[in-house]
Each structure stands twice: as structure tokens, then as C-alpha cells.
Length: 185
Image 1 (cartoon, rainbow, N blue to C red):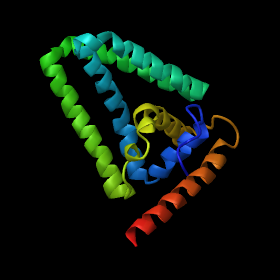
Image 2 (cartoon, rainbow, N blue to C red):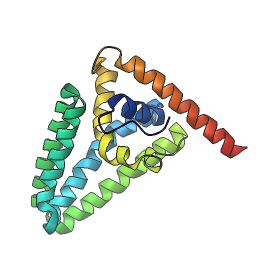
Image 3 (cartoon, rainbow, N blue to C red):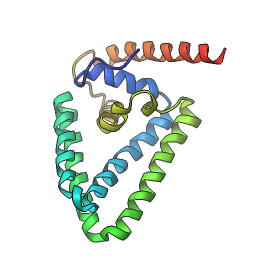
Image 4 (spheres, one colour):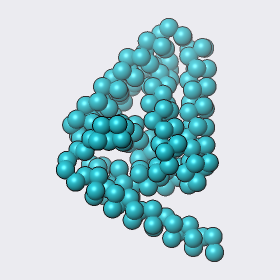
């Protein structure tokens, strides 16, 4: 399966994400670390004078995009974007640049390292940024929310969504396995 069909192709994006996140430990790691990565990225913008106002614009743009993908899950993700913007600003103001940038660095290094462990040790597959950087940087926070809502509450954006995505995910995994098998032989 190639890249999803467009920015609003929720099934394609979720199937592509699911193809990289099938191991429960890796999924759990992502659920724990993706939003702290977003928070500290927003916090870094708050800490950096020329980009302070960009933090709100970026958080709002992400939230609006998530809402366009799915109103219910998107509203939750948009709320998380707003909370990250508010908390990032408050932490930046409280910690100041010197301490704040160190906190950002430690959290980013830890969270990205955990994701690499999740993919390398548990998923046994390279992370998605290598194949789809846009999805990794733009969509993953929303897809983690969507996946969590489904796992813990059985949420579907519409009836049959997860059945359709499941078929696309199987196809994507098969294509990756075939490609990987050709490289190994």
C-alpha cells in the first residue's frame, strides 16, 4: 500500500499507521509518549522569541485539521492541542529559556528513544517517518487518540470503519513483508 490518498483520507492514514503499530507494547509506548513530544515541541516554540506566536497558530492548525478528519475524535485531539499550547506556554514562562530548553531536550530524547525501542524491539519494523514523514509529524497525535478511543471504548468514526481499515492494514503489511523479503533474499 502506498501513501494514503490525500490529507483527509482517514481510512488510508489510519491503515498506514496501523500497519506500523500492531504490537501492543509498541502501541502502548506511542500512547504514552506522542503527546509529550507534541507538548514539548509547542513549549520549545514558546521558549524561542521569534516563534512564540507560532505556537498558538500551529496548535490551532493541528486541532482544526484533526477536527476535519473526524468531529468527535478530532474534538478531543483539538482539546489536547489547546491544552498542550496552554501548558507549554505556562511551563515556558515558569521555567525560562535555560531550564525549559533542557526539559524539552530530555523529554524529546526520551520519548523518541522509547518509540525507536518500540519499533525495533517489539514491532520489529522501522518507524513510519522513514516512509511517511508527513504522517509521522502531522497525523500521529490524532491517530493515537483515535486508536485509544477504539481500544478503550470501541469508537468508530462511522459504521464499518475498522473493518475497512483492517483490510487495508492487512494489505499494507503484506506489501511491506513482500518488499522486505525481496530485500533479504
